Image (cartoon, rainbow, N blue to C red; front, side, top):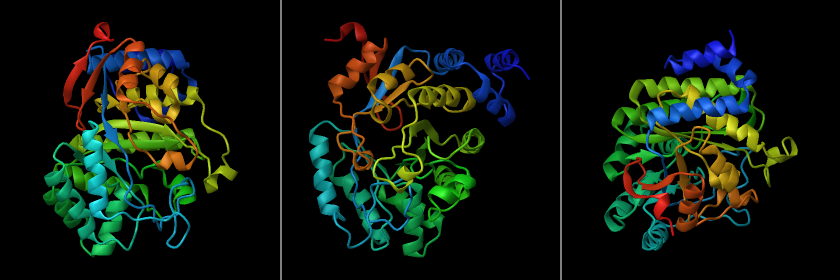
Length: 364
């Protein structure tokens, strides 16, 4: 196996296997990976546009019984700062967001065993009816499994009830690294990789769309990264239910894991993850770069390493903020960052439908 033979194989649209992927990740030069990923990006998305969405990421509760050691957000009942918002309070928040132009709400919370399934169903149905400007992109796999536990229903029954209430897409949170070697150490109460994959599989069967995510930069090894890519690529082959792949690096601030991993992953590693994901995930249409989780300049560079999407404007975000990691932007700056990177900006919806294009030549 040589790098040149792998490059030739990839450029001829042949799928590489896990062994080849591991060799590529460990031996390829970063700029070579970036060039190859960019070629693939423009084969899949030939227009010189980068998409973004007007979104917000509020949380309805920070009560959680899963105790992931990489998380600074969650609280146990009775602890200082604990909260659970009513549906009325969340609907009011959604209306405020809609008034500011937000079109997508990515809603997640802790796994709060005191909340019945009806709470989640009401949140969806009232959002659809009372805030039609907002597309509900609600509930991670972990929260959905929590609903299964409190309701006593099957996973399929819970997903069907959420669908009947009006939910059509779910975020990819809860994946972290889909390697049980890693999960046993950083999120032992969250379940196995198969649990995450099974929720996504059953959701895709029903017609849901979702994102696939990956949080790296902690205790994982290259082999774990390949395991993650392999299992989501395999699931994507089944139903093509993933709209995009979204990687981000672990933020250690205020987390139990900070004692073991006190430093941030490097921008170089992020660019490797973006480029490698574009190459390995040959059945994913979109790869999302993040100005938010990695910094605006790194996010811009990632647009030349295979990414075609710039994420959202994130009117509200609390999970990274709890780890003392905060980046802010607005619609105008988001568009400007895309234009500065050499692309036209395209506002999209949750499912990557284009709402309008803002050409860079007409930028103010």
